[in-house]
Image 1 (cartoon, one colour):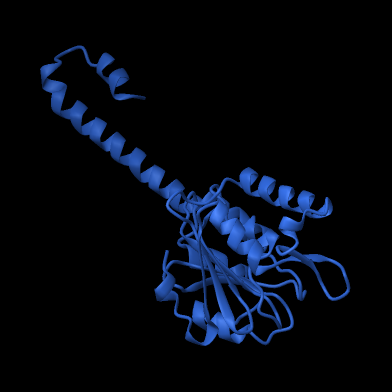
Image 2 (cartoon, rainbow, N blue to C red):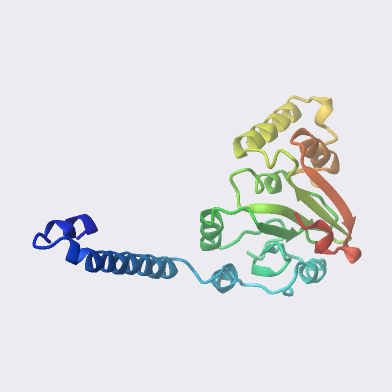
Length: 236
């Protein structure tokens, strides 16, 4: 019953009932607020770390610096999500040397937080290699990430949005699609950006690709020595 409905039932002496009406309305509003807070607390986890940690299936330290150094000699890829303090929230692997991914519930959580303040990082086992084309698609304007970092054997590769932010996912996809179309057509302008591996397959992107991609979308791209990597130097 609303406050307006309550006033309709009081007809004997309106003035004498002003205080009870106000008090009753305040009590009702207070109960509604408490109920809303209760529902909110029930439907949302207490914090990012408490929710995400349960989906970890690997552990290479608690900070981004520890993760960088402890994964450098691993044979598999590992992906970890950090907060903007560089503290690890979750780490996952599928025990594959060429790819990694997070649990679907982690992905769902990140994309429903309606925030862009997570850091995603992964290693490239046994090599110094910059961002792949698939890596580029992880960081876009509708995503939850403030930065992306790849750790090679000797270097850290850091990608951050520029003044115009991240590109839209469709724009990034169309850019990559155009690059590969040019490559398949034998366009010499892209031969330095895409190379086959030692066996001729699959294709991989090069440092030239990353520079062209980041310049095209006005992103901030940096490479630093892994042994001297400090997250505080690159906080978004």
